[in-house]
Image (cartoon, rainbow, N blue to C red; front, side, top):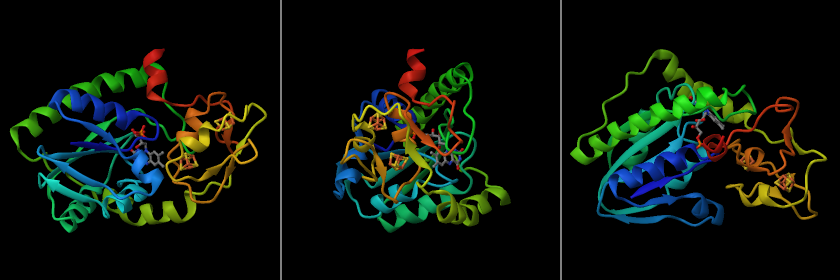
Length: 252
Ligand SMILES: Cc1cc2nc3c(=O)[nH]c(=O)nc-3n(C[C@H](O)[C@H](O)[C@H](O)COP(=O)(O)O)c2cc1C
Ligand code: SF4
Ligand code: SF4
């Protein structure tokens, strides 16, 4: 069973493709997390978690959710994290988490996918992103053959910088950067309510039509990237920038 969370469809894409390659089901964890429901997963095949990298680790809300889930059937879990640049020392934290859950952690495989974090960074061109996706498809074939063989993923080497990024920088990131005060909806808002529906943490209320951010954001970029009119902005940082969504990239 493949379990995934995706803010801007990169992880969804990889999870669904892997599902086809492994002839296994891909299950979106969004509905569980949004509904505050605990996961109780049973699979005869190894579990595979597919997720984005947030600050050189698994997204914190996803880690918190997984630590409360129950897993039965297979005792093996592989993790496939996708990233725009690097994933630091994520592996050692995953190992500890899955050991706590009584699972055999079969390793972390990182696949580069298009950067989606437009709240902080500039995004790459469509042309560059298409190349990145093509290369990711080749990586998925390698991942498939390792999982089919029952081997562990190869261990990744971690630099001192990677250790610091996943520890100290990760803590500072959540403390100082992951805030939603800068979000607002511009005059382009048509009061459709979609941003509220796509927020995994129920952090957007649209009671009077227009969105209001409620203070418990994880910066997943789903609201800003999926708004049909491009009405959502994050301070000045996003003005005039394209939004990233994988389905949009593949259509161009
Ligand atoms: C809040 C946030 C933090 C991120 N942190 C990292 C990071 O530490 N390293 C990295 O390489 N990419 C980072 N990224 C980029 C995403 O991991 C990457 O674009 C991923 O493919 C997005 O997957 P998704 O479309 O399934 O959400 C970050 C993105 C967001 C939104
Ligand atoms: S998704 Fe966009 S247009 Fe729809 S309510 Fe939210 S901000 Fe407004
Ligand atoms: S408010 Fe937007 S960026 Fe924050 S968690 Fe919800 S959908 Fe993601």
